Each structure stands twice: as C-alpha cells, then as structure tokens.
Image (cartoon, rainbow, N blue to C red):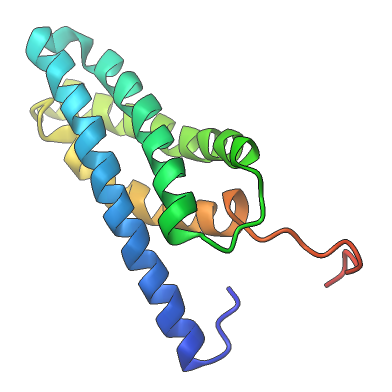
Length: 145
C-alpha cells in the first residue's frame, strides 16, 4: 500500500477522509435521484439505482481528480472509463443487496441503499486508489518493480 512511515499513514488516512467527503456528495446526488424515482413509482427502484449510479460516478471522478487523487497522471477520459468499470462492481453488489433487502427481507426501498454503503465505500476507495487513479509508472522503470 506504500505506507512506510507514520507520515505515509497520515497521508493515507487524510486521503481516505477526502474520499469519504467526495463520497458523501456522490451519495447525496445518487440518493436524491434514487428517491425521486422511487417517489414517482416505487416499482422502479432499480431504475433509480441505475440513474443515481451513472451521475454519482461522474461526480466522483470529477471531484476525486481535483481533490483526492491529485497526483494521478492518468488522463481524465481514461480515469472516467476505469471508474465506471470499478464502480460497476459495487453497483452490481448494490443491486443484489438492494434486491435481497427489499424483496426477501422486506426492508424499505428508502433504507436499503444506505445499508449497502457499509460494503461499497471501502471497496470503492481501494479500487480507485490502486487502479483507477494510480500514478503511471515511469517508462524507464521495469515491470518487476
């Protein structure tokens, strides 16, 4: 993870906190879209999940590039593509968990997405940090490093 000192650990924790703040804005945007759709017709909760996810990931990429992973040398469009792939896994997890919670357990469609965040936040941070926003290696470095 690249943590070799207490300063590295502090930087990692600060970066996670910033990621959490960006994630809070993503969550607010995603949930606002989700709840708007569910308010219009509760049967379309998965449509609300999909629309909220699309706009939440876009919001995430914009703010993570500017605020959290500022040392990334990847181009925006490449990060955007990687982020949609990375968040795609957590989106599928959210769809499955929402379905189980709503259809099998009987949890309200208004509460189910909040429980999913317990699993998706740490997964999204690690995937974004170490894949979508990672620093490109210098071309002179070998692949074994």
